[in-house]
Image (cartoon, rainbow, N blue to C red; front, side):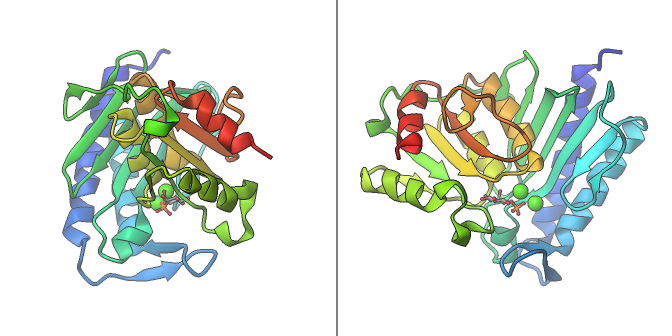
Length: 264
Ligand code: IPD
Ligand code: CA
Ligand code: CA
């Protein structure tokens, strides 16, 4: 059966708002923080609380759907079933250090096709939404990627995986290259917000390696519906939600960014 995109989007929107308010209430309070793998890969009690709430709300509305969520992992077999891909708190390190840049990211897909995506940043109260073929919106107003034509005129954003010290895919050299070109490069610490801002035209380009499906699912659809492009670093190979390299741009600077990333 074809899923009802409006029903998916409405559920994602209401759930992201509720989870975002939970995070906002917890922000700056004292809460439990644990390490996952690696010294700086943190998880707080709010990651778990928000994820539980999101899954419970979606299950109330869609008891047959399945989940891929950062803290609780995968459930069910993803064939002909809507699968929700959830990052309950993207920007955990920021949250744990009282830096107000974090969000809830909820995407839904079926048979590999993204159906809806919602990113809610509670501290700025900004809600980014998209459904397949229906455009991308910020607080109900349609958004589009920037019109910047040249890399030279661009503002970029990036992020680093928790194992950046081992330099996967040459991520350290890539950062140095763009910085050495004199370009403004930001590192906000939330991949979903990076993608949402790119979709809204605040950034012109974004690259990162080793992202997980829950970092990207909602943002990928929002970006595409805002007219942006996402591939692997070579500029043409389809981006996989499941790891590897990611180059996301307004489309216009895609080839130029790709050639910087592919330099030997
Ligand atoms: C992280 C953030 C960060 C990115 C990391 C992610 P988390 O997610 O999105 O911007 O650079 O690769 O793991 O751990 O805050 O959900
Ligand atoms: Ca994340
Ligand atoms: Ca997270």
